[in-house]
Amino acid sequence: MNPASLPRTDEEWQKILTPEQFRVLRQHGTERPGSSPLDKNYAPGKYYCAGCGALLFTSETKFNSGTGWPSFYAPVAGAIGTSEDFSYGMRRIEVHCQRCGGHLGHVFPDGPAPTGLRYCINGVALVFVPEGETKP
Image (spheres, helix red, strand yellow):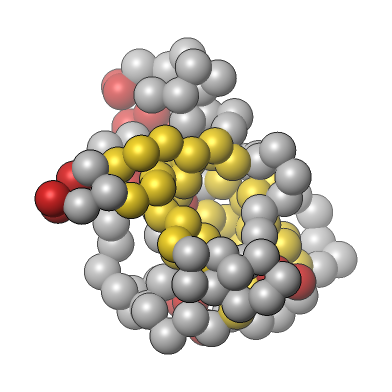
């Protein structure tokens, strides 16, 4: 867990998250590709952590990667942390919420300009708030 994470027990997280959110955010799970309605959401707005409500991404950096997961080319400054992930016999860079330490997904070096990065994020780890509406 990220040192900056919120001090909650698994039991406390299970009370505030759905079973799927807990599996992804706290147990480093991955949702099925194409299962999140946020994958094809291109409405203007902001994307917050489903675990703690921290602002993570905005619609301005969202793009269609064709992977089946919501993808962004940049996070909000200071919103995420990264760590190496050696699961599945390969090296990947895991992305987690800087505030609560929740697992969000991974970042890959095959995204569009201007960053060339693809933040491939589990939709269940996000809460979308349309432009003009208030934070969750």
